[in-house]
Image (cartoon, rainbow, N blue to C red; front, side, top):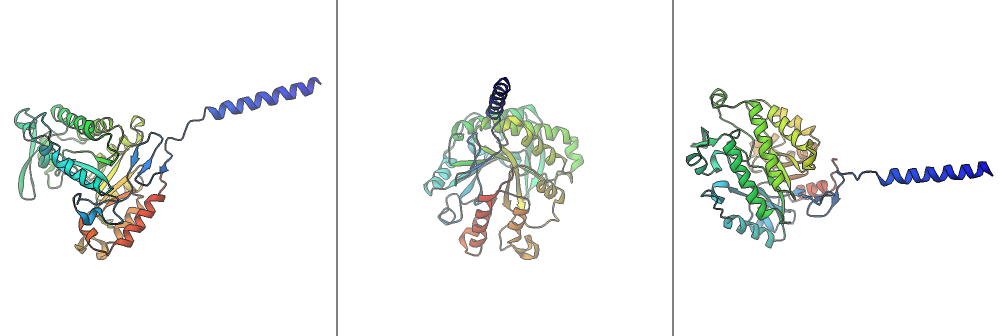
Length: 347
C-alpha cells in the first residue's frame, strides 16, 4: 500500500510539473498568420506581401489590375512641411483616398535628402550640409549625424505617425534618409574625400541612421518599416550594420526590414549587398530597377530574372513600375509571385 501511495503521489507531482512547464512556455513571437492583405504577428502588425506598384496611386490601370495589391505613395518632406511646424497633408491624403477607394493598400515613402528636405532646415536652423549634383541640378544635403537634422526628422516622424499610424490601409513605411534622393541609401556621385571633409565617417553614418530609423519605428508603433540599402563608397559595412542592428533590436519586434530598390536579376551590381540580403534573416522589400522595355537593365533582356532573384533572396514584396500594369505581358509572372509570397515562411 505504501508503495502504491508513493507511486500515485509521484505521478501526480510529475503531471503537475509538466503542466507548469507548458503553461510557462513563451509564445513564438516570430510566428505569422495569413490575413490576405498582409501578415500579422502576435502584436497585430500587418506586413505587405506580393505585388505593389512603385507609383500610380491615382491610376485606375494600376489599382484595378487583378494582381496589384496596392501602390507606393511618394511625396517630398518639403511639400508636407513647407513651413516649419505647418503641415499640409492634402496631396498625400488625395492619393491615399484614391487607393482606398479601389480597395487596395499602400506603402509610404517620404523623401528627405537634398532633393526632398525643406529649405528652412538649413536657412533657419543652420543645419550643416553638403553640396551635390543630382540629375544635373545642385542640391544641399543636410548631414544626418547633426543633432538638429535628427531632431526635425524625429518631429516629422511623430507628425506622420499621429495621422497615419492607425490607418489599416498603410502596410509599410520606408524610412526617410539623408541621401541623394532621400529614401534610397546611396550617395552615388559623391566624392568620398570631400564628404569626409564635411564630417562623414562610417561610424557616424551608421549611428545616426540607426537613431533615425528607430525614431520612425517607435513613432509608427503599428507598422512594418524598411531601410533601403546600397554600398557607400564601395563599402557594404554601413548597410550590414544598420539592418542587422534594426532587425535584432527586440524592442522593435522584427518590424524593420531591408529594402532593395534596384533589383534587376543581375548579380554584378553591388554583389556584396546581394550576398548580405541573401543571408539576411529579416523581411526584404524590393522595387524593380527599371521598366521592362528598357531591356538593357536586365540579364539577357529577360525581365523574369527579377522575380527569380526576388525568390532567391526570399523577398516578400516587390514593386514593379506602373508601366507594367498597363500591359499584359507579366500577368502570369505577377500572379506566380503573389502565390509565392503568400506561402513564404522565412522565420
